[in-house]
Length: 254
Length: 255
Image (cartoon, rainbow over all chains, first blue to last red; front, side):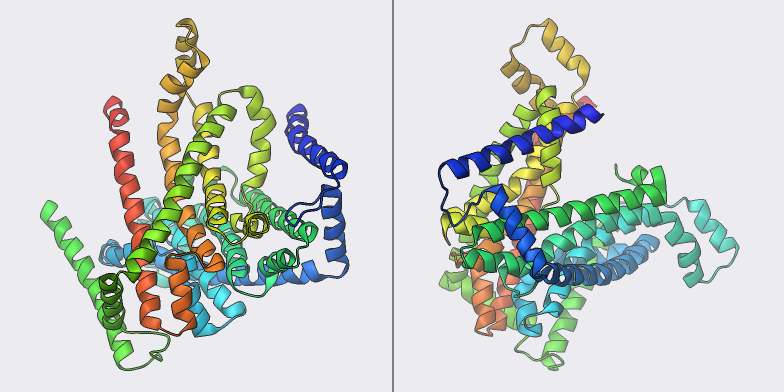
């Protein structure tokens, strides 16, 4: 296992080293590339003046706020559709008509309705997060052992308690899988909105670095955005394993 | 049984029509300023006008063109790269982890890099779309190659098939369900990136159209563009699943 990790590192390390040597040998002057050593310097500089930390805060705030709103809406709809077949069938055409709209297409609408800033970004992220959560939590609720629902009926639990005490706990492992998926989407959409138009956060930071022809800073932002995406993914995978063990994996295949 | 399904479908359409009616009502009563929310009647009129004058048609064609070129390039390169990495266990241990590391990267973050290299051009858009759409395909191809029934490889060895023959006759057909699923996923990615690139670079396409409409506060045109983008997403994904169904019919028959 340890040998495999070492082997996995061979390629990136070799590429970085080759690039560094090539850049130094040719005295690279470029608007789009910079040697790794300069990228690290630029990253350190951006940390020292807090600019990258502020941008990270803005991006993560918008992404998580959108994720929270989208999750709540998606979960509520998913549970409702999962419990009531009638409702699910009645809403089918409406859902299938709205879902394929690419989230980024809403950007101009959000822009004229809400202006630049957090709000429009949060709305777009929330829209993007609703669908995976809705679809997966609907399947999760449908997959609940029917006897659990029967027990709830026999106990005459009121609807609210039935959902809170039986449905959500039973479907939670697979709902978390949906949440993990949506968290990745939230970060991607937030950065994309910032790159396209919104002047806050990491996306705006990387665009600004590009426009200032600071290739080193631009690539430093790119590396940092990649690191955040990777860390978020790892964090959620670990959380899933810790919280649910194998229970969550059973839902992945479907 | 079939007629009840049809009835449900009809009822579902009726509900959707109800929502559109509600939207019309909200617009008519001016609960939301018409600057932000045109009624469905105005959006429809704008769609019809856009198509009869040909404006919207060229924009739609532009977006479809960006999407299709980028996606096709990504599919070909992705399958080739995935086959190269997937067919050799040594390549898998050395290269696959690096790819896994790159996977959660928000692809749009490479747009500035592409702009720095190629400027605000068509080539930049194609590079970004192809780069974004290639990952799902590469990863599923590697996975599909790794999951080939080992006995098939044994058969190939005893038949002394060449490496290329093994890839084309055994590994690719066996991995095709995975590959097609990956191609479907990357189709969505391609549409999103096409729209973003058009917004940023002002390329002829629906992304540019919706942005211009928003800047000029022509909300009916804006909604027409968004509706068209939704339709594009829907139609391409339906077409892809039909193709998937067709291409995989032989596998379903085998099982």
